[in-house]
Length: 251
Picture (cartoon, rainbow, N blue to C red):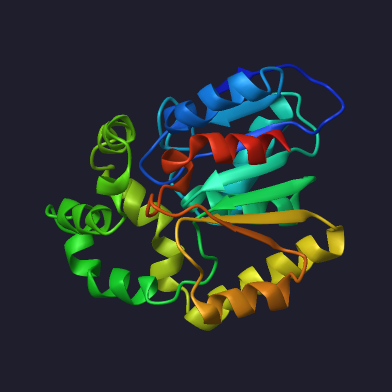
C-alpha cells in the first residue's frame, strides 16, 4: 500500500489515516495542513487503500482481508500499535483493524457500523450497480452527502475523485449486499466488544447528531465511547472542520 508519512516518532502512538471509498490519501490534506500548524512533529501516515490512488487493486475487498493488508503496510512502515483514524469506509475498516491487530485507539469519522437502510438501498440497486450505468447509483449517493455545504476548495477535493471503478464499488460493498443484517450486526457487535476488552479508546466524529437507536447501540456495546458532532459538513466533517479534526488527531 502506498503512503505519505509526516512528523517524527516520539512517545505517542503514530496516527494512521484511512480514507473513504473512491477517494485517496490526498483527501486528508486540509486536516494535515492544520495539524502542521498546531503539532508539526505529530507522526502521521496516510495510506491509499487497496484499489485506490497508487495502491494496487485486489480480487477481493472483504473487510477482514483488507484489514490484513493494512496491517502488513502498517508493519512495513515501522508502526507499532497506532491510533487508526478512518473516514466513511475507512472508519469501518479502522474498527475492524483495531479489533484484530495492535492499536491504541480508533477515530471513526462519520461511519455508522450497522447497515441500517443502506443495505436495502444497495440491494434494490443491485441490477444497476452491475450494469454499465452503475455510476448513477454513486452519483445519487454523493448528492445526499452534503458536499454543497463544504468550503469550495473542499468541494473540489471531493468531486475530483470522480466515479470509482465498478469493480471497486461491487468489491467493497459485497459484504453489505450479500450478508444478512443480523450477521453484519453480530460481527460489528463482536468487534466493539473486543475493543472494550482490549481497552482501546474509540472516538466517533459525526457530521450530524446520531440517530437515537444507533447511539443507544453504540453506548451499549462500548460505554466508554466518545462522540463528537461537527455540524455543517454532511458526510465530510473532517473537511468542514479540518482544524477541529486536527486537534483530535493531535490528542
